Image (cartoon, rainbow, N blue to C red; front, side):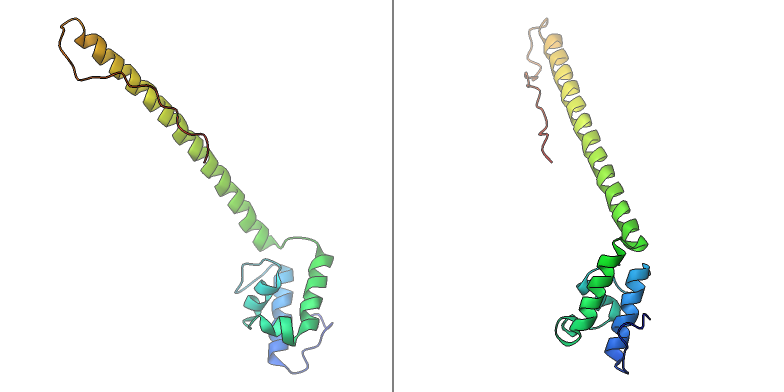
Length: 140
């Protein structure tokens, strides 16, 4: 623990201080690792009101230490980078699907045109109709 705000035998206070140290070290046990008062309460396994009403000094100490640290913990930054990778993969897959949809429309139009050309010399109706090429919407 830090020694900056002693626990004074209060188990809630001790839990908050231990949770604060874990979050700032980037080794959360219960929370996401984000440096917020809500995540501190989750990490300490206490109700949030303990920080917002009962132990205001610990809330302020935590916020000051977060500001002084001025960095994202390793555990949370790893989750952020994984999220960014998933977002990129999602965008790539959407683009791939849009490309396949466009190719499908081109093939459908070509098959339709070939069916019409094939039916024309015999004078019979092949059931094929001219279908305009539909462009997929570019908005996600």
